[in-house]
Image 1 (tube, rainbow, N blue to C red):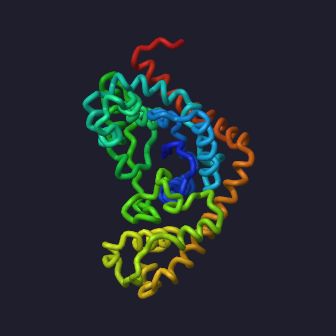
Image 2 (cartoon, rainbow, N blue to C red):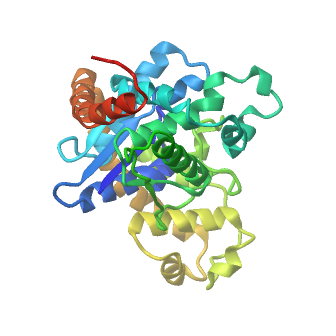
Image 3 (cartoon, one colour):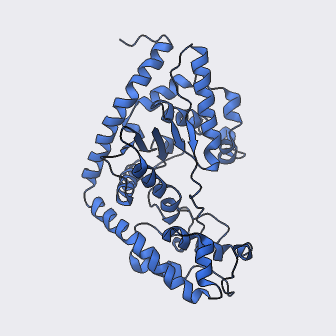
Length: 335
């Protein structure tokens, strides 16, 4: 098994990122058998599809790497690197753009959503980045790719590109990666609006718990999280029209590794005056050690950068033969 997954270098990760993606990565790493590979990359090339301040992007890359390491990614057991340090991604992307088709990219839902009505003003990279995503996984002949529902279409595109390339050039070069969908990955919502996903772009810092927040900030944000005056019910169905209550229950259940119905049974009939302090203690106990490790790592950014270089060297060892085989299949003379 070879798992490949990437994450945008946005910086300032929050509880939703940790519970929705990072913790899943750590679990995958810990479940790998000897001889299997986990490759996790920081998608700094993908970040360039929209304007980035260079200094901010460089800082975000180091901060993201430090966060992943603090949360449990072990750079001896997993391969952690930033995409730009492995040029095989970009080189294979260019080769695959001769195989990908405009019609395929035009149908991508995220292109339509992100470009909106301003398609003429969107960058070329925003249109073609699904081809780079395909290269990200095909260059390693990944067997599995962790995907959420919003990324399944992109993995299907990667499979289509791999199939067409293999067929067009009479080779069996690219494996067809399978989706790895975790049923445990929760959707964590804003602490101020239970109908909106927790996001770093929300102007209110009170809407999210940042992984760098201190204990008092974590407890304060949970204490001030929007709720309602009703006590917690005895059935999950009764929370259907109470998104803020459902969100806090979800966070509690995921942090403690319990079923939401089980947690609800413990707090049935109680109000949030009793529930929130317990949730705050649980969040502090879980996130505090991660924050402490993150703080120590960010005190030595050069060491974090060295880990990324080490990971990139390992990744290039795996990627180079695939790129070379693709070049040969296309008739490119590279000697």
